[in-house]
Structures are given as structure tokens and as C-alpha cells.
Length: 158
Image (cartoon, rainbow, N blue to C red; front, side, top):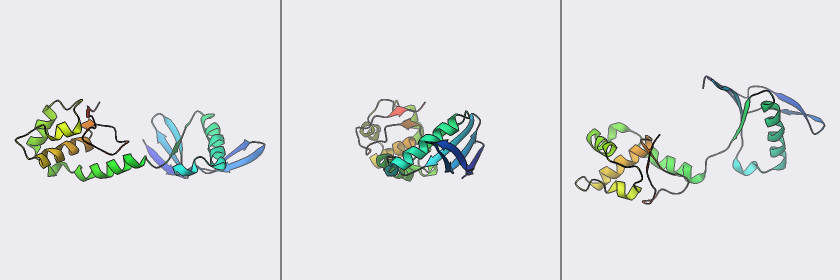
């Protein structure tokens, strides 16, 4: 991403026999070309006037070879999980040796609860916190679209 411009321009287009006007929320200038973004709460996306505006906006933008995206708030479970994991974001709080040991272990395919019990000679709260830090830092990943539980399967990040 090279630049972000808020409310970048007034878009005018003929839609349904009338001249329509709309100011998109953002223009992202990327190495792959411009991306026009509109932001709207999820519960408003189904309203006919919003859907109509976004449909003709999409057509006008993509006809120029640009990309068009509509953004809304994240899934509530994803948001709650990210907020929870943010508590484990500061690497300086974790024993580097413990993190190295966990990184050297095969966490791929292991349920989260098993990862918490991976090092029985180390206090479980320290291991749990370190595993959650590795999840925050994207060393490992898991599905965040439901509340985190011991059954969530860890995957090595790509």
C-alpha cells in the first residue's frame, strides 16, 4: 500500500435512468492499482438503497479497471478473539528460551489444549501464555470465527 485517501472524490454515474452521486469512503493506492473502498455496518448492507448504491458504484469503479471493496466490522467472534490475543502481543514478556522450545516443537495439527500441556515440567500458565503469544504473532494460526477453546487446531503459518 502506498497511499490512503479518505473520501477521495465525488463519483457521478447514470444508474436506473438518473444521475447518481456518491463519495466513496477511501481510495487505496496500491502497487496493483487503485482500490475504492466503502465502509458500512453489516446490518445496513441489506438495505435496498445501500445495495443499489454499492452496485452502481462497483460497476462504475470496475469499468475503469479499478478494484472495489465493501468493508464492514469483523465477525464478533473474530473481534473478541483478536482482543483476547492482544493481551499476549508483547514478546518481551515471554521467556525467549520457552518460546524457542515451543517453536522447535511440532505444533502443526495439535489442538490448543494439547499445546498448553506440551511441556509438563514448565508451569502451565507460562506455557499457555507463550502458546497464545505464538498465536498472536502468527507463528501458528487457528480459526478465529468461534470462541477459542482447547479443541482449536493449530496450524503452522505459511
